[in-house]
Length: 325
Image (cartoon, rainbow, N blue to C red):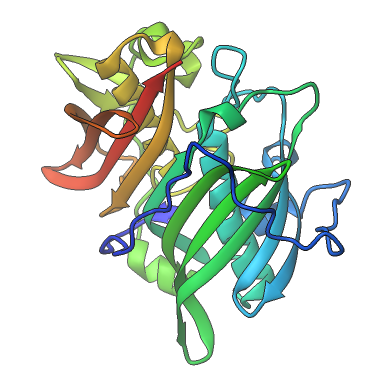
């Protein structure tokens, strides 16, 4: 999803309790169909089949849906943390893909429309993220609210998702978005996205929890807890296909890497909560600067606020909560 101006949702994200998980949302006599293939990649705005995480869907009632997904045991970018835990940002990408699939297949949004993400929040249970002997099969309950239409055309909503694995809650998420027809999007964006600044050098990968410099999205600028966003449009996952702005998942990764640099002990750090507000498009043709500030600890762990600024304006704001495992 892309980013644009929006006010944050007024309802707090459901956080996953440490105790017993909720009951499986599907009746025992009506299990969701487990398909042996992924959904069409066009429905989740992916060019590479390998990046499609969703495998099926069905409607439960008017605005409630069941979606199935699968996480690979290893991923080229969202690789297992410590070799033991699925990367929590796999949950973020899964929730993001849900927000493309269902509007296209259930709410009448044509393929080719642009989706603008305004707010995103996610909470995970690290104990349920352990990599097993087979890929993780997931059941996702999705509920849409604040649905908006214009002339009987779907133009936006909020949706809440609960990801289950073997009947146990793994993650919850919430996204608010609007969608824009191609002609309106061209008017909105004009000639943006045709130029980009030169690729900058990465910080040491180990300082931000990465193994390869290719996967680092922060560049040093000689200041503590402040970096330039490193935008490599050749990256096969973060730029799965050409876009005219910095993708939202790259900004989420930048927030995670900035929080990791601030908190240290990158090898043991696991983000358990992410809450973001996206204010403006981050453009490709100007430097974006990332600043991280440690906040007072929260009930679930260490908290870091990350702000992206471009051209003197705040572009996005994210709070990452993380624990050491």
